[in-house]
Image (cartoon, rainbow over all chains, first blue to last red):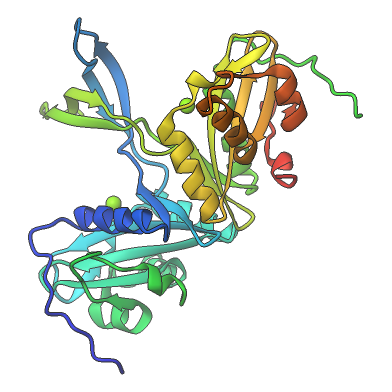
Length: 178
Length: 178
Ligand SMILES: [Mg+2]
Ligand SMILES: [Mg+2]
C-alpha cells in the first residue's frame, strides 16, 4: 500500500470552497469542465431601482432535483454530490436525500459517472465513493439496517484523497478507477 | 427532402417552458437526464419567520458562467443554450454572450456535445445549431462581418425541428447527427 501524505490541512475552508477551487484549477488547465449548480430559488418580487442593479426582494428556496456538481471530463459525463460530517467514526445517511439518490440512479442508467465526495471534517480525510457503492449502503438502510456507513466500510469501498494546496481536492485522477 | 409538418403550434409558451416539458418527458421515459440550471443569485439577506419557510429578502442576479442546460444522454455529455428571437429573417448574435461561447469551447475540448436551440418565435420555427457552426458566424462577427446569422444560413447549417405536442421540442433524435 502506498503511504499517503496527510500533512496538508485545508482547515477553515468549507468543502464547497475546496471543490470550487479544485474545479477552477481543472478549468484553467483544460482538464475538465465541472461547475457547482446554483441554489435553486423561486423569485417572487424584484425591484428595479434607477441607476443600480435589480434587487430580489422576495424569493424562496426550492428543493433541487439534482446533485450539486456536474460537467464533462474526457468525453464523460460527471455528476457528484459533496457531503461533510463532523463525525469521526461513520457517515450518517440522513445527509443524503431521496432526490439525490434518484437523480444519480438516472445518471448511471445513461452511462454517466456518479459519485459522492465525502469529507470527515474533524479527521481531515476525504473519500470518493462511487454511486454503486453508496446504493448498497442506502438499500441496507431501507431494508431496516444501520442508518450510517462506518468509516471502515468507507475505507474498504472508496478511494481516499490526500488534501493538497493546489488543487485542494484532486479527485480527477480517481475517476480513471471508477 | 422530407416534407415537415409545421401545423402544430406551441404559441404562448416560452421556449424555456417547451424545453422543460421536453426534458421532463425524456426523464420520465429514461431517454436522457437533462436539466435547466437555476438562475444564479447572490443571497445577501434571509429572514426565518417562525413556523413558515425562510424568505430571501435581498439578493442579486449574478452572471452565469455556463449555458442554461446540461446533462447526459447515452453516455455523452450534453450542453446547450436556448435562444429565441422575434426576428423573421435573421438571428442577432447580441443574444449570445462571451461567457457562453467560452464555456461551449471548453465543453467541446472535453469532447462534450454543445449546441444552440434557436426559436424564431413569430415563424414558429426551431433549429439545432451545433456549436462548431455557431463559432464560424461568431468569428465572422469578430472579424468585422455581420452581427447576425441569416435565416438562410441557419437553414443551411442547422437541423430543423418540427414542434410537437408531447414532447414540444424533440431535439434528442438530432443529437445522433451532430
Ligand atoms: Mg450538497
Ligand atoms: Mg438562455
